[in-house]
Amino acid sequence: MREDEIRDALRGERADAFAPGFADRTLSRWHAARTAPLPLSAALTRPFRVLAPLAAAAAIVFAALSVRHRDAASGQTLSDALLGARRTSVQPSQQRAVTLDDIYGLGSLKPGAE
Image (cartoon, rainbow, N blue to C red; front, top):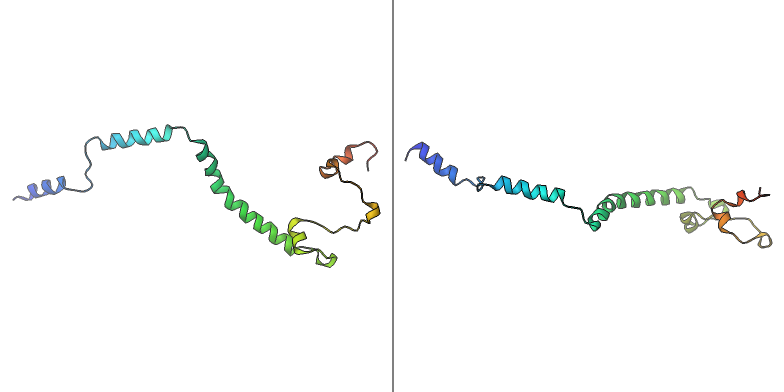
């Protein structure tokens, strides 16, 4: 057997040789996959996978900062620090009902408000 015949025989048996039309079929499938509309579930889960770890890390950092800077001298507990609750010195006789205007800062828009 000659060297050229051996090369031709080996070239035909190579594992990286593909059947005719393989590239065209592959490109047409790839193009169809790229132009297909993205399902809603995939559109919602893709950003969640990126943002969820960042949000969890931010929550841990904020919790650590809240605990580190808590006001232990006034008797603020760890749970109060994590929730952002502060101790107030308002006497029961001075308490009044808290309205949504107070929560959202709209009480200052009322005429005669301080």
